[in-house]
Image 1: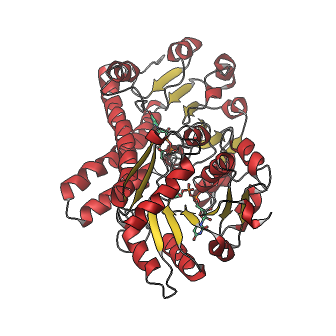
Image 2: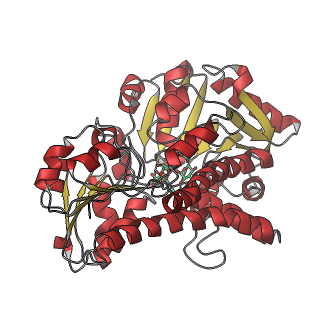
Image 3: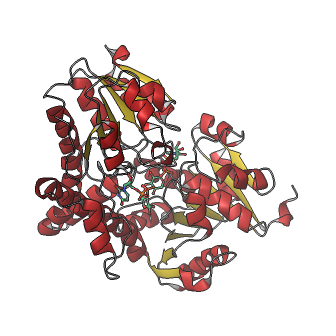
Length: 465
Ligand code: UDX
Ligand code: UDX
């Protein structure tokens, strides 16, 4: 491809859930830019070049196929691509620290910092560096100091352009986002850099949806958006516990409060708990930042969102065991769904992990079914299955999973679980047969009439004994 054909060269470091789909969308909407995605993981880069992409996302393969080899490229050659790039998005992972100061809460910035150093070492010209990864507020300040101490006279503008896409709807969210947020230093150079990034998104997003702000507001807004979303789930989940005690019905309560336009009806589905790579990590990160500024009351407030989530997972399993006559030892339990939510194969922080581990500890025999997440489920459970691998089976067929089961637990809200032939499933199961609906997606009255004992989050218990 002749070099001058492209207006600018964009590089993305980190070919994950965020970097991959975001760059594919930019490539599709901006044929005038050459976009390369690099990653240290060669297997991942190879997979991006096949039709078996490393992540599952509805509509993603179609977009990738349109642009791959035209203006979207994949590579493991990080340094030479840094050299060529005008604009660099960084979307390497920023997991929770598992060691040292801030262990279990603070973001582990080692990959970010290593990436910044690679950028500094390989660069030969001025560049715009964009934080796509979720980072603690004021990380850009550290990055500026690392990058701009170079002795080559190169100037770097650091911007924050947090990603708000949700997994399973990434392509839709990227194509038609509620907003795009771009934060920069409010200097002449910072604003110029910000406008360059605004110009990229303006190729398909109306200008009034492209918000600009100072750097720190952009960094903080990402954490706060996730904290607010998670807080709504913990709020409704806390009320689900009260519903179970009072014969109120959580779906009716959600509906009643959600019709108040000030509250709104989204993110009010009670569940076995929220999962995913972001919510817990980002809230703990927020908690850590508050603590480090001495804002202990604020830290405790947000920490309670995570605590209620763990409580909800524990409550769910405890309830299963109690109802199944206080023991699941030797019993077959089918887990319907392992992904942290529907339409994704991602299992990071999935509540199913806690539920599975706890049931394994109680010596239950698990059969796990999921349309997309079996591979990841095996990986997640590997550390807990060292001795007794036979206690867990995997199948994509829910009917097979239900065969001889004493109980089914619905852990992911996959649509396919709504329309199964539950009469047939009931016949395949041991009696008394239990269904624990951790996502409130089934017709509980109908199941009860078939003969199931039904326990659903935030709903009155229905049992035949
Ligand atoms: C990541 C962060 O986890 C999240 O905080 C942020 O909001 C967006 O970026 P995600 O894309 O889901 O989210 O992460 P992941 O799928 O783990 O992808 C990160 C990629 O970066 C991996 O493929 C990893 O190999 C790569 N990486 C990591 C590098 O290329 N270089 C590194 O030094 C570290
Ligand atoms: C989230 C944010 O939505 C997104 O903006 C951000 O960029 C990354 O984090 P994601 O983790 O992909 O996205 O999934 P999301 O749809 O937000 O769901 C998170 C978890 O909450 C899932 O486990 C989901 O099942 C659960 N959830 C969601 C509920 O339990 N109830 C609800 O009402 C909504």
